Length: 209
Image (cartoon, rainbow, N blue to C red):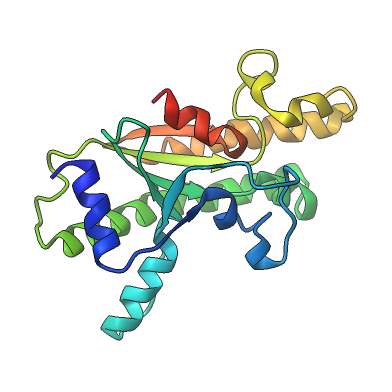
């Protein structure tokens, strides 16, 4: 099946669409949080896959299993993207020590492969074919709310870049640690193309995919 066919199968099965900003627990109005960017930044619809997993679990009378947060299509609709949202900003705000950041990264490293595998299996079940994803181009996106590239390379695309000059050296070191450990956690996902994006850059990444 093509990525678009799988995506439409999910919609036909009752999955709903939303904007990626609204699925981000750190800034979703649904969770009574203000948008980190001040307003809705994305204009691209994605499937709220975590909500869909809950819906299927309730219908089947089983326990909810952790899944990715969203399923998305790039502009050319030639790849099925499984998107996991994690807020490094929240980690820094409430667990801002090197040890706590490392512990959080270890949790990501353990959770990412399991969430992806379950999400892919659920897609196969919805498509009623164990081979549904065999010929489907796929990718796993770890998306967060800090710059995911080194300062001065791609980071200038980020609104947060303008704050770098006012951040303390200690704060910048912790952000660098989050970014680097995030890459290590993403490396735990194998057998599929992986991507590490900043949430503010989501639409641009999809348009040039």
